[in-house]
Image (cartoon, rainbow, N blue to C red; front, side, top):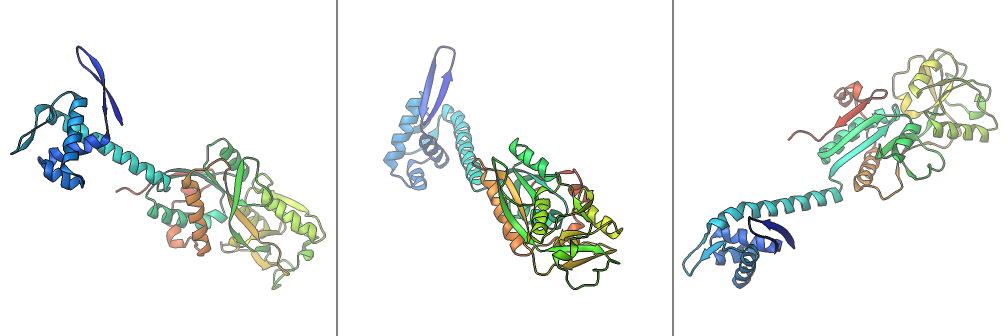
Length: 342
């Protein structure tokens, strides 16, 4: 039911009409025939006549002149027709947009991410996601995990690609693993272990470790401390760095060793040898975080799509990486990725 307040110089009243009345009126106005309008609407002609009469009673004027030979719009009908069409169009558009939002085909996603591991796959995943959902606007912000978690809780982010995950998520948030990979030991190329086909974790107990700071990689630090403790020793940290790639430079310079996710070994690292651990240790799990409250369908859609792409082994090839400016994925950068122009 549609209620319209009608005002003129002498009186106020409320017009009550159904959207069905408008559909029937537009059909008759376009066909200029009750018979043809009834056929278009797939209803009986008597039903069309009855609804038009109810509409005219509600409006208070005759909208259609009709006799046995013809139907035509009155001057009031000519005035009423564009407004009726607009109401029907707007209603249809609102319904269409609502359905698309419900199906997570449109909207806005604010995503936080860390470098290194997400640099490898995020550009290509986003490119494919934008192609499939062109009306979703994505805003990217590079942030350390602790800042992402805070931004999620304060509704400044919808989703956080938080890197390594270990243990329970903070109160109010959910975390889900989207990828995992084996750890590799990174040593200087002139290190005593550099030519070994593999190393045992216990062989590293006297080494000095270069690690990403606790603020930037809390879960990774907890994971690494845990596997070392199970191997019978505690980490001896000689240098903290802001990110894994910086740690690679320190390893190359001979400051110490580290344990990296396998993706680091796929990037240029002169002066560093990456060696598998034997026996194998638990893999590093990478995850996304979002608010525990009922989340937007779009958040769930992006998570599932990302997992699907990563499970298919997606990598960001150099040809694709060249199309994504470094500034869009640099330290502290924000990038807004709207749907393509159409």
